[in-house]
Image 1 (spheres, rainbow, N blue to C red):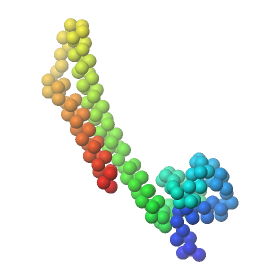
Image 2 (image 1 turned 45 degrees about the vertical axis):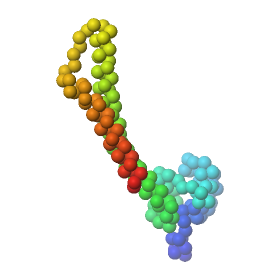
Image 3 (image 1 turned 90 degrees about the vertical axis):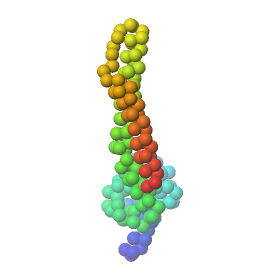
Image 4 (image 1 turned 180 degrees about the horizontal axis):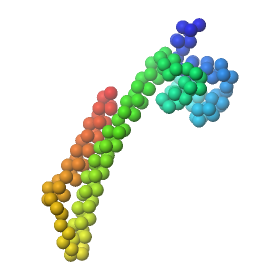
Length: 156
C-alpha cells in the first residue's frame, strides 16, 4: 500500500487526499483561495500550483513537500525553476537602483543646466568627471549587469 502511494503523481495525490477528507473541488478551492477550475486542472495534470500553494496543500493534507513532489518530475522541475527565479530579485533590485541613481544624477545635471540657461544664474557643478561621466557609467553598468543576470537565469 505504501509503495502505491509513493508512486502516485501530484494529480492523483491531490485528488486522493481531497477525497479522503471528503471535500469537493469547490471546498478545497476555498481553503486554498483559488478557483475550482484550478483544482480541476491540477487533478487532471493540466497545470501545477505555485510553490506557495504547494506548501499550503502540504500543511492542509499533513503531507511533506517531498511526498507531493517526489513522484512528479514535471512538478519538481517547475518548483526548481520557480525557486531559481526567486533567488535573483534582490540582485535585480540592486541593478535597478543603480540605474535609477544614474538617471537621477543625469536629471539633476540637466535640471541645473536648464535653470542656468533660463534664469541667468551660474550654478556650477563640482567635479566635471562626476557630473559628466558617473551618471552614464552607472546606467550602462546597471544595464549590463541586469542583462547578464537575465542571461544567467535563462541558462539555469
